[in-house]
Length: 243
Image (cartoon, rainbow, N blue to C red; front, side, top):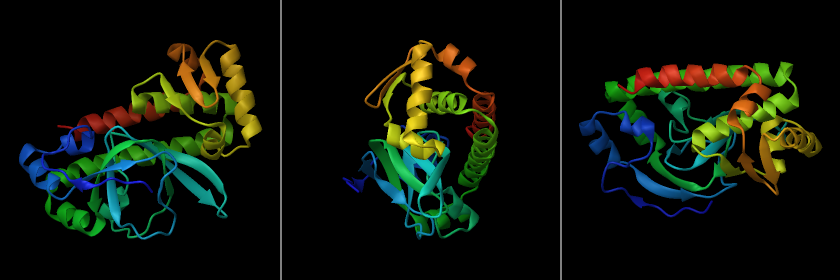
């Protein structure tokens, strides 16, 4: 992993979970954080790995993949500036349950896992924010599992692209066929066919991994209801946490 690190002298801006903390708590928390640069494809953890660090993305994006038999994968969640990687440490888990891979390069704040566990135990504000955030992660995982079982690939791809757009706040981003195949648990040829269908409808432009959403409303119509369910659940839980 390519990481440039250094202690953060001021409370870091950009991550909504950190910004949800009261100013005094955030100022103290910031002294325990370091800013790191993460690159596309960096694997931050594998299932069964000891959790050494917690990550709070700023402008980066992390894909959470469930892994079966060491090779088959399915994306069960995305973590952007609204969240964190390693929330299960607060629930007493010492090992990772997913493969976490960087989908978009950028900055994240990183914290020692043991130090985070200590801070969580004594900080009611952090507890409130994290309990609500874990609700959103569970909602994502449940709905994606349902979606993967019952909905056609074209709709699932539309849902995945819309969620990525929401996390990045951008209609343009880069996702390779290979990455999407791993995320959706299908072969690359399936992604190619589904992306071509969405492109033929004038909803997206997709060339060599460069994606531009041309019609977000149309893409939402092409998606399944799972997109709105996950979006609404996340917005409600996070709105409650960020007070």
